[in-house]
Amino acid sequence: MATKCLARPRVRAFGFCVEGALVGSSLGRTRHRVPSQLCTAYPPSNAARSITKPLPCRYFATARYPEQSKASSSLGSPPIEKQLSEVLTKAKSLTQSTTVPSEQSSQEALKSCERLAEALAGIEVDSDAEPPNPTLNLLDLEDRRKRTDTQVRALTRAKRDRIADEASKAAYAIVTTPQVFITPSLLTIYVDTQALLNRPETIPPVLELYASKPLPRPGSSPIEYTDSNPNKASSAVPISIASTALDAAIDARNLPIAFDIVNTTVCAPAFRRNKLFRRALVPALGAAIAPAAAYSAASQWAAWQDTLDNEMARNVMFAGLLAYIGFTATIGIVAVTTSNDQMDRVTWAGGTPLRERWLREEERAFVDRLAGAWGFQESWRRGEEEGPDWQKLLEWAGLRGMVIDKTGLMEGME
Image (cartoon, rainbow, N blue to C red; front, side, top):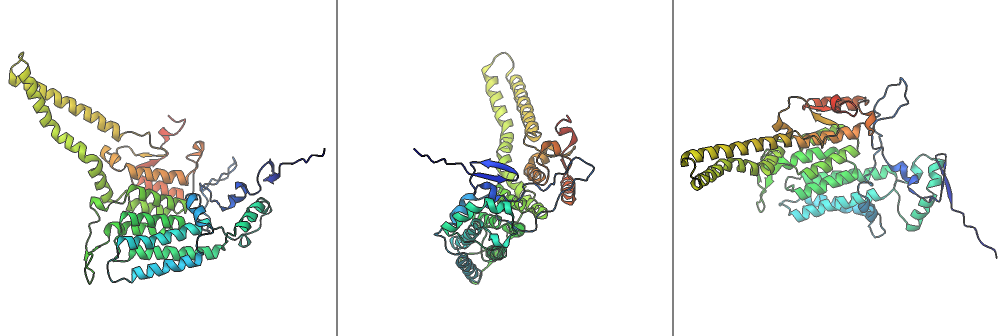
């Protein structure tokens, strides 16, 4: 009885024979990824180690939003050109409005920009416009067949960049229109859209506009505006939005934009006031009420005892309670402000006041993320980075009282 021998397919990738691997596996899609670190590894010689410059071509954040990318590339989505025309129409009608638009209409206009960005992130660049590579062509045979079967459209890089630029400009025009009030939900949609489009250049101006933009009065004709105070606590950018904006700048490998995002978010006076209001108000009220509570407890204890004089017993008990509360609170404050378990590469310089360490912890954490993104990922190579971008980061952090890769805290240097 004859039997068939089904051999598992073999693929030769980068000099290695991979048995049982699908031809259209993730090995064939590595060319669409951007390296997670900017530093170039050199052989152990006298050659200088340096930081390479980012690639000039733009890529789209498909890895950060996989669900949206898959959903946007389905057959039920409208063509890209049609979506772009709808985005431009909604943006034009909103910017030319003579009345204050509702938050729902503004949100719908920005949502259309976000849907277009998700669709662009799910569409691959036409392979005919890219330089040929025999290995990648072999690994992409199955992937191409699947794309042909599902009729997924491909765009050239120039066309996709043009559509992305127009979508980015339309979203920026919506949020910068004087009669549109920027709410936290609108700001979230805008930052997510620019992150998907890989266009973080307009994020810092919008973050600054979020705190200083005049407030339109609904129902006024002509539209009247009220000046806003950019330093009040309610004008602070939420930390989640600031983190997303920083991720967009890191993905685009744009260090100056990352500096601007840090300056307009966690370094702003409004953010520090907001942090004091949210996290220091309750402990401050407790510290203010503590003496009165201690005096009341000391008076009650003095009335229950008959060993000492009533007034003397009250004074002794009051002094003991105040000392206990003061010493315990001091130890707690020192423990909170000097904790460094969350620090990776960036620490505070010597002599930085404890109140500033606690108040500027989010700023230090953002700088720590920048150092991790622009430096080597291997812990044993830390401290070997060179190049103009790394020097800018070192100087920028040093001017803010921070130290990157402090020698005494590095691995093996304790």
